[in-house]
Image (cartoon, rainbow, N blue to C red; front, side):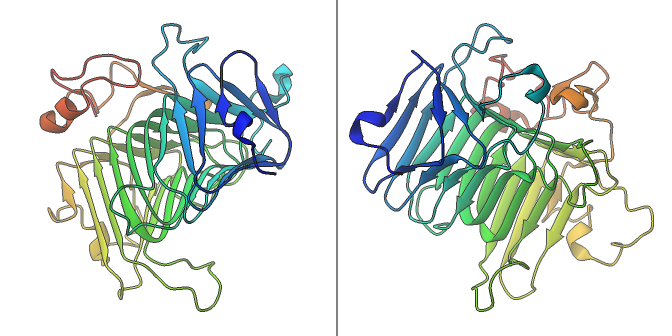
Length: 325
């Protein structure tokens, strides 16, 4: 169903409950104000279509438990036993043709796919600009992007049933000071925390593969499997990626990837100041608490110039002096 003009401004006065997919029509903007609470029934979500936009305008909260100024998206089952059940609702779907989508200080939890971002990677501006947000406890992927473009900073992409961040069939992606850490414990997980590809193995026959560019600065890629980075190139389209001042978990104990140049962590074209298989020292991964403990190897190892460009972390703490990854 399409939201009417009177329904396009969500406020924090009362919670919203959505049954089915709430669609944003062409040339319309769904504005979601700081402190809003949005609940979804089973198989429900938000669909932002051609020429439409989503604007999530959360702000920093003073209470880390209440998160009074954050925008929270979750299911409509509020009983305590449902608090950590993944897959309770569908997704926030930024469909091909949607434009100028922005999200700040949001939490997305217990979805099937947290954010599904599709198409338009060749546009001048990112299809989605997202910051200071957490997505976790997702049945499949926290962010699944197909041939799209995302600029993210101060992101926490936590536990998910497949990948924490999946960028497939090409696109243009940039993440700064973001944690991509998957410690999924609700069953078998086959996918790495971070997956990059310039083709889509599951696409329909005849689908066009796209170039991929992806840059990660001051990021952590970690999880509870040995190989938390997956790089897949068709050797035809551009596959251009870089990691700068990042912690990466990639324990190839069997030497399976020794001959693959994409995993040559000594190649400065791909990897610069990368810390391989060091302890991220998260506080409590089972609860998606990815704050750094005092023994974390990420402390004091971030790129200074990048940290100055994002001077406050997701909790509003200054990081301009001896910044952490």
